[in-house]
Length: 224
Image (cartoon, rainbow, N blue to C red):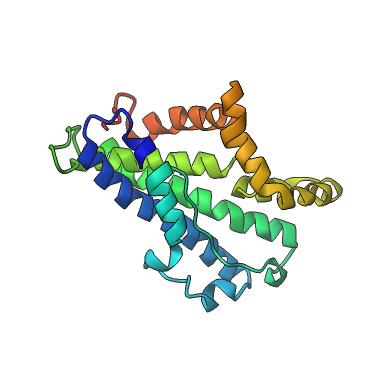
């Protein structure tokens, strides 16, 4: 949360929006993974109580606390690809892409009232977000989560999606990178930016720049 509050003009309203939107974005990202895995024959999400619209079972307490403190968090859905019907790599890729697609759909849904002119641009009050600022932040955060998870490095969804579309021999060789997931993640998001190489920004920035005005309107501001 501290990262999102830096430079915010409305600290309390932005913090309220951040907490509520983060719960929605993370929970239904994981719900999408769970429901698609269930439809592909994996009983694991259902056994863990994940086939529910209740957001609470989909959240990880430690991951949510990390998100609130440092701006990086996580949640996960227990799955077992051995149960998937069809080609295991393809099915796993379908399950993986379901989460980011859900965030894209949430962003679209939250922007639609503004795009249709049902909600006008309005700044927050001192203590509460306006409906517009809440929806605009929801569009922004879900687009951020969509783009972030589509980056093709382990352990993000984008890497599993990549393995699902690559030729089998190449995919098999790259699977070994999973064992180095933590090191690769830290290098890409924390070490490389120190030396001026910000891969994440180069991917996430253009995605948000394209979709944000498309979903909210070309002149819709993000009010923080």
